[in-house]
Image (cartoon, rainbow, N blue to C red; front, side):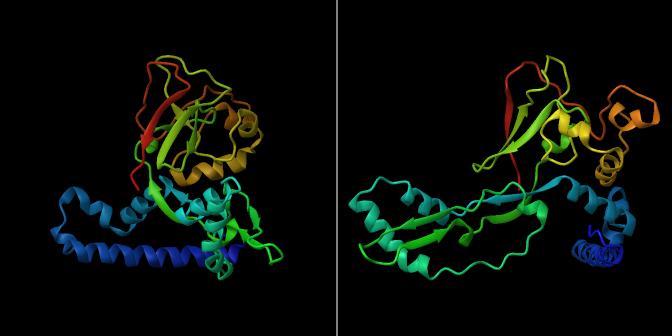
Length: 260
């Protein structure tokens, strides 16, 4: 959401128009509201459809996957100096020299967590101009994925688990070092800023910021971190979904395939 009030209002209007366009297309594809089962009609009303889209947005995450071409170039760079490496670099040379910086228009959230730019320089022939390459010339593939099993985990301002992703297309739920997960204890994650991976960082977040980040999920957390400012410390509670429990203390609890 833009920080400027006028830009934020314009964004809301645009979002409402696009939501209504999407709803009408969905109705057209289904043959009209009269042909929709009674139990689904509320989801195709303007308000119900907007809430449905909002729920999907809350449970999806940006996915960036490194290009196989970039992986190949990095593998070539990692080879020991030998005729085979020289031959591979020469084969890449005309293609690399023709590369132009990509025109990117990504948000701060999408750019967060990406690998830092790396510059590589090769000497193809003695006395020739070095072949320079930057990893930023080949941006990662981007998309959005819904992690249905992760969406079943409740929120806690004192989460017992953290979320990590890897390039093999799997999601890992890891035990955080500041908490020991005992048998029968519910697995919880924080719906707040994913860059806050330590309990101290979560505590440092202000009450207003914390409430604003949880607002799109449709509930207000009433744990001590949110209520202490008002003099009413309550036991931490989790929200949103049925609980999931574990029966062991493995550091890596489980690896889950995602369904994009």
